[in-house]
Image 1 (cartoon, helix red, strand yellow):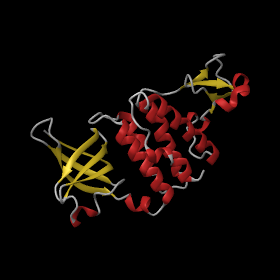
Image 2: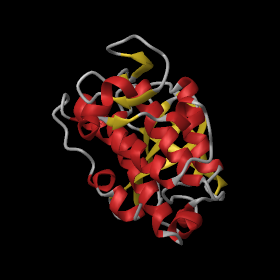
Image 3: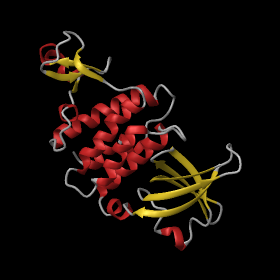
Length: 238
């Protein structure tokens, strides 16, 4: 079996004295894992770094065997992340969530656009906004997306201000005001597809996505919530 694809390196493991096992989040094959012979050599040093975008040629004789990868660099993002502690924290969280949540060889479909946006806009001042879009739509990709179209109680589509942690549904101001300390803030900028939210809005969305990812995916599957994601808000100093 053989394929060609491109994607982003999200995990690197040593294998033997000189080899590496790469996990790549790819455009057409989803999460793919393969062995790079002599991956620790000088030839591959600048290529096999977390966050780098690479082209991948993978082949294996039997479907159940691990792929062997031939890789080339498309674009280096590693330096951008490594020289900025906040971006590095976001990349670490991105990689751990992707490794844990993605099924191997499952095409990401339209969700891959959210992955690309995170990297394509990493040089912009509002780069963190695109990370929050990735997490929010990760919920949808996993089949645990939130129902935010109308108030869970009144069915009104007006003045939606909160999200219930129990139901994952929207709650309007009239109903939720008395219980606001127990509810999450409604993610207005995501629902409106705005790209320049305030830091407070970003913080609230990260609290929201962390809760539902942990509750509806990691706990259900008996998995530990990724440490680098659990500490992300502190590292971002929001």
